[in-house]
Image 1 (cartoon, protein in one colour):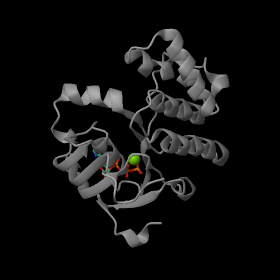
Image 2 (cartoon, protein in one colour):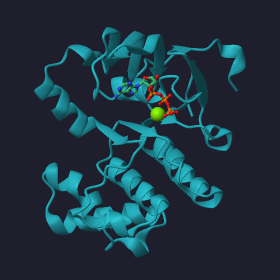
Image 3 (cartoon, protein in one colour):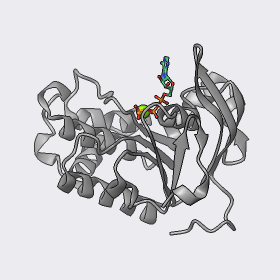
Image 4 (cartoon, protein in one colour):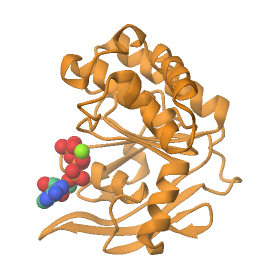
Amino acid sequence: MTNGDTTEPLLAAHQLVKAHGRTPALRGASVELRAGEILAVTGASGSGKSTLLHCLAGIVRPDGGSVTYAGQRLDRLPEKRLSELRRTDFGVVFQFGQLIPELTALDNVALPLMLAGAGRAEARARAAEWLERFGVLGQEDLRPGEMSGGQAQRAALARALVTGPKAVFADEPTGALDSLAGEQVMTALAHTAREAGTAVLLVTHDAQVAAYADREIQLRDGVVAPAEVTA
Ligand SMILES: Nc1ncnc2c1ncn2[C@@H]1O[C@H](COP(=O)(O)OP(=O)(O)OP(=O)(O)O)[C@@H](O)[C@H]1O
Ligand SMILES: [Mg+2]
């Protein structure tokens, strides 16, 4: 929808620097994300995509630079306020799963709603709607260990979106999906961005997936590559 420069970005990172031990992961990466916008982040393995996503989502604090969300400095928020804000405003799909193994798909998706105060029946009903949107409603009673990788990935997406977050951070959300399921997931994500004005940061290796984005940036060795190489 809108990626015009007239709207204020919802989320902006400026000159992010982050090392894991002695390995530099980000070396001055800057990025902006607007409400309703899907931004694809591509780049080679090890270029810093997941680290960037974690810094923007307030999961990892950068060593240098700033992250501003809705006018406030995320990188300076005390831990308690940061985790509260992550719970109310953000949805995250991690690159390597993170569903709770003891809970069924339905309860995994219902959990964030219950943490936000919804009753169990209502939470489960809304969770079922999201599972249906991602085409895994038939698997709602399975635990993560009993699901295929692609089913678990779709349940993780449903869980990230069920609370109606303002921003969604998805790290390779279609990595375990065939092209049909990938399309289904991307259509649902794009629909959410359009309808609810959700900002979506999408890390992907797949050009077909990146094609759903309004804009694409490419990371190279921890910085954003010049624009002419992006789509
Ligand atoms: N927990 C960690 N400990 C040590 N080094 C790490 C850690 N996480 C990431 N790195 C290093 O930081 C750099 C960036 O990693 P990152 O995970 O952000 O890359 P990526 O672009 O997401 O890669 P991929 O496409 O393989 O997921 C890499 O050199 C990686 O080896
Ligand atoms: Mg990664």
